[in-house]
Image 1 (tube, helix red, strand yellow):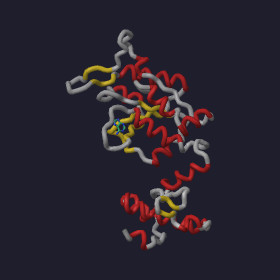
Image 2: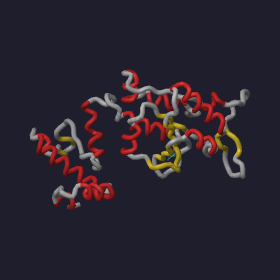
Image 3: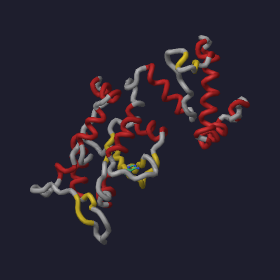
Image 4: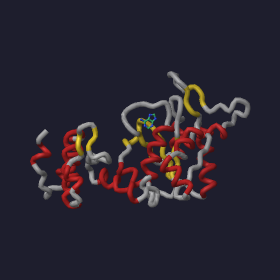
Length: 239
Ligand code: ADE
């Protein structure tokens, strides 16, 4: 549900999500909230705020009527996510939960927000993508749609899916290299050329630990607490 359906459509039709739609693994239906405006002449969907204050607010009825059109089409009340800085901050764990749903509705606000009575009637989840303010909910919806889509079985090819596990174990990804073996005087770490998979896995795990401790000490602390039996090698604490 958006005032800018073409923005969502063009983004989603690109790359991996586009390929998944062609394969019938995902589908996207945009609903233009403006189509549900009762103002036939100007298709107005916003108005001044009661009590004063800057900016315009999206009116309740086009939003509620848009949602009802979706309910009617699918035959039940779907989960409806409102994108707002007031929501719970989006995480990988939430993406995993949303990926279990057959249908998800994303409600994208614009202007100064949406009349609270519409939000009361249609939304089930309020989600923020981070502590900053954007001009509308479209980019946050696209961020969520991308993160959720890649968890749908078949959307990623096998060679792509390993990446998920890496973040889902609570650590950042280890550094990766492709050809050439030496670039601008820098060689690929020897161990990666050894063909010894156990050694490569162990090396990558240590690299993940080093990175996570350096860039996301919060995640590192959680990881250590959740893996009390794992011996962390001293080099992780070196830098
Ligand atoms: N709308 C405006 N800013 C937002 C944010 N950070 N997250 C979700 N929705 C938003």
